[in-house]
Length: 113
Length: 109
Image (tube, rainbow over all chains, first blue to last red; front, side, top):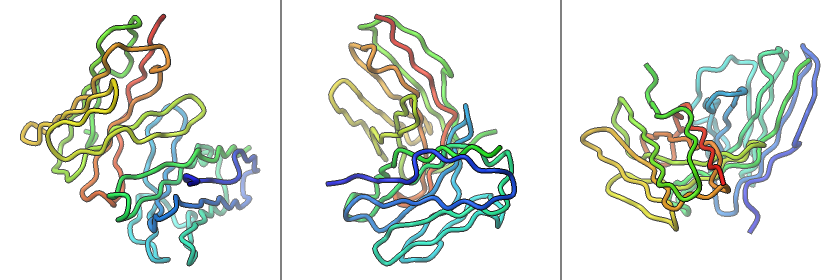
């Protein structure tokens, strides 16, 4: 049983560009949450998707958007990249079948230059 | 004030020592999570608990709902336990996690 997978592993972008990160949840999970972790900080909640809709959102600007597909996989899009967007982006999946415990992917490390 | 506070921020101990990491939270919860993060970033969920105590191998997590406090204990610590340990709260099990700042644990052989 594959756990949560994320792609790509690493990414380097230039200021002003746009980026798309991808996440496939653990089998049986229907909810995907995205977190941003700056260096030396704890993860910060970006948003959560359930049934292909954004169910909750943290304190992030509209430059951060997402999508969930019918197979429960999810994308995180960031437009007009800023240097401050450099971080580890973590995806977590959960669902009723797992008792709502969140399982994390390995993360995508984004560097904006 | 952060909703979730952890102490200590850094902890260095000798192999074999008993380790305690503390977590306090300021608002009510329905679940308290303990997670482990190794260098390189991957986060592993260790425990999710809403009352009492849970044990898995050498790891024990306890929670006192009235005092809004939780502890993570590691018995017979080993260098492979070296990692950042993070506690996080959620209102309901499937909602967003609000993380503490983490405790960096280093176990010296």
